[in-house]
Length: 246
Image (tube, rainbow, N blue to C red; front, side, top):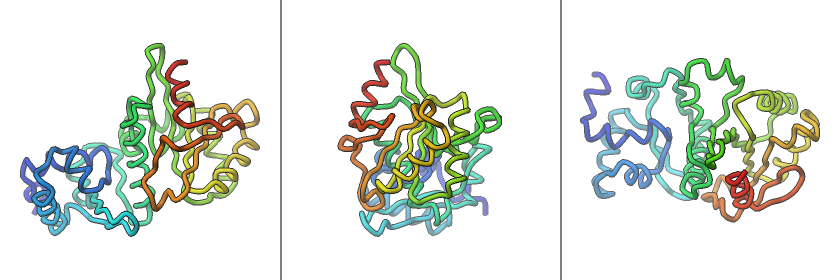
C-alpha cells in the first residue's frame, strides 16, 4: 500500500513542518502544525509510526520525543530533488541543527533559514557555490542582505578536511560569513587554529566561532553565548546586532 493511502489530509497538514525542519520534538511539531491537544496528537503520531511513515526517538537527556520521516515515506512525501534522509548516526546532529536554527529565527537575529536538504533541492546550487552547509541563514537590514553558512561540529575532523572546507567556504560567492558552532571550547580552538593556518589573517574575517558547553545535553541559550570573531570575543547578540546595522 502506498504511504499516501495511509495519511488523510489533516495528517499531511500536521506533518508539513517536517518538510522544512526534518526532525522535531512532538510539542514543537504540534504547535507549528496547529494540531489538536497533545494527547490526541500523540495518538496520531503513534499510528503514523506503526505504519512506518514516521520514526520516533526519545532523547536520553531532555526526555523529549522527536519524530522524522522514514526514508520510504520521505521519498513519496517530499518534493525536493535533493532530499537527504536522516540516519540514526546523525540524529543528534540534525536535532541540534534544527533547534539552533529555529532559535536564531525566534530571536529575530536572522530573517530566513534554509537547511541543507532545501539547498540541495535548488538546481545547480552546489555546482555554483561549491559547498553546502548544514544551514544557510539570511539577514536583511534594509540596505543589503547577508548569507551566513552555518556548520555544527560535534566531533573533531581531520586537519585536511577542515582546511578544505574552510577554503571552499572562503571562495564561494554565496556566503558572506561562515558561522561554526561547537560543543566544546577545545574543539573550537582547534578549528580556529587550523582555519587561520589555511586562510590567513585576511581570510579569517569571514569566520565566526561559537561554542556551547553541554550542547548535546541541554537546549542552547543563544542569548547567553559569546563568540570569537577576528581573535576577539563578543556577545553573540552584540555581533548580530552589529551585522543588522551594517
